[in-house]
Image 1 (spheres, rainbow, N blue to C red):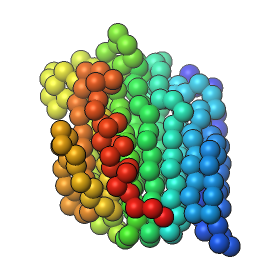
Image 2 (image 1 turned 60 degrees about the vertical axis):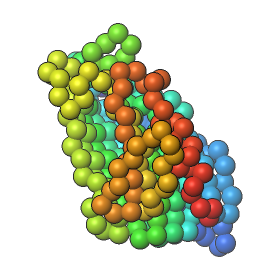
Image 3 (image 1 turned 90 degrees about the vertical axis):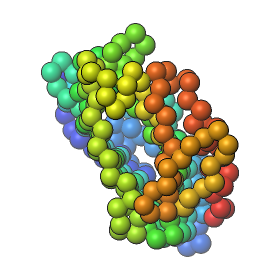
Image 4 (image 1 turned 90 degrees about the horizontal axis):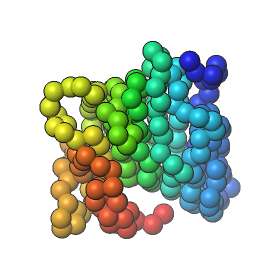
Length: 239
């Protein structure tokens, strides 16, 4: 069973203060580490503080970007959910982007190993005039595995209005369905703006300003979304 008895929320907050920006950081099962910090922007990486995810773990992350600022978030490595020995684990992520702010997060994969049972909640709130660019990749199984069970709930709003509401539940042993024979779901989402999509890629328009590009893959390395990420990142206006 899990050795983690205390649930703490890792936090990254970026706020305007006296002509520059102030970072508020707190550790949980991941710890934020500052890479770059200037008057209006910051770059922060997320580092695991212990072996995660084990059965019974709850990984909570709250990110908030204040008006007119930009935060670039990075993962040092992917997250593996290990065999839970009968216990599930939870990943609970909240992202909030204020007016005129920008948040980019090039998230590394969440890998659901054999025997793992993962529930992931992703809540995104982008204010009018805010911008989000998010890469999100989930994978069933490590190399040579079929993988466990993954239950993903995603809710994204723009200016208080629903932009994307999605529930994805997959597990090993299911007959071919929404994923076919794919083991990896790789997505790049923009919200608060609708970038131009380069040739060779497909993106779907969201109901609110935004776009979603997604690939279903048998292997993570086959994804071409890193190229799309670079292209869409280059289209973000400077702060």
